[in-house]
Image (cartoon, rainbow, N blue to C red; front, side):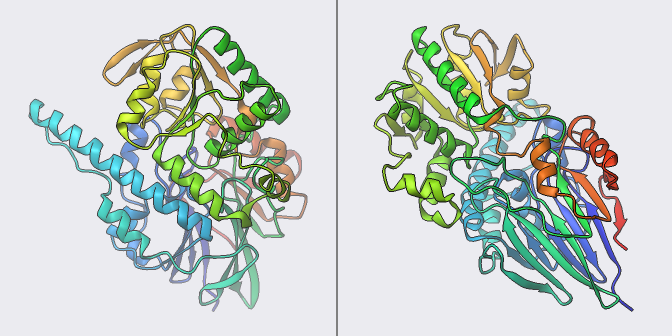
Length: 467
């Protein structure tokens, strides 16, 4: 009797973040990603709830990439009993290290502040989701790095093949092949798919034939603006802000987005579209470390970008300054005009960007440029949606700066990109995850239905037989 196969989503089910997918194969358990829920307080609370499975039962964890909403619950998974191996590409392993250690540090700092405040109010405060010790411990379970195109056994009867997803450095889609009734059953996880035509990474490899596909739908309801138009708008926003004697604040994701924006700022200065020696601050220790990792993983780069690297280093432009320590970061806020400040987090849920917003958001001369996705419940989303004032670091701050939203820089494929990646090959069913239910997911479901492709939007913890 062949093993029974089923799939269940324990994150990113009818929502964007917390990616965590379980494949049950007889008595074997394979997890794809184990990410953090991100957004407002309700999303944060989800991270403390039970996984929906027993961590000690998981035989292997396959990691698509190192964004926190895909890897951020791994330390807690290990702390609660996971003892399997973690499979990922070399670049993902290196990036996950800095992402998890940084997240652990922030968890401990936030918990310490909450505890002090709670003691004053006589309240009991829960501890951090995970600690630095937890983060270091989970890194011990990362196995030999996977190469794109390599097929390896995961558990008896199951193999995995990683292919380039073009999303961030080292990102992968994962094809599982499982033996059932003497035949192969295939299950493809898209991971997060990149937006084709980016300057640094290769385009996503097309989806191979697979019986079932678990596909992200972050932008499943709309197209992106063209990249050249987006770059032109970025340059215009900077020039107009400098003409008003203001600063440019760019909330930036540390992985991929920061490096891509640095690339375009470098090109703009070289081409005379931006001031050659404008001060540019990358105020994010994690983004700085990630930039150093980028230099070590040229195997992930697009061929044209590799050719450009031989001419000049886009991460070494004349006015670029890396700021690691707090004193340097604080000093930036004494600059009243003419600076471009990149800082995390991209959704403004934490990190140094909140301090820069506090000092610049209320100033009409300044601009805030959003170049990435803003999930529901985040500070970034409230600003993008037109809030007149926001609560920042204990103060109510008026929103008087000019707000720019340039979605052509997204590292996610848009609706056309998702459909092009999926192709026209026959599928038994496409399972739609990692998107806002009434936007990306519902729109993609309708498009697939019009093409005669069966699809389903899983509920949280719902078990779906794959027969």
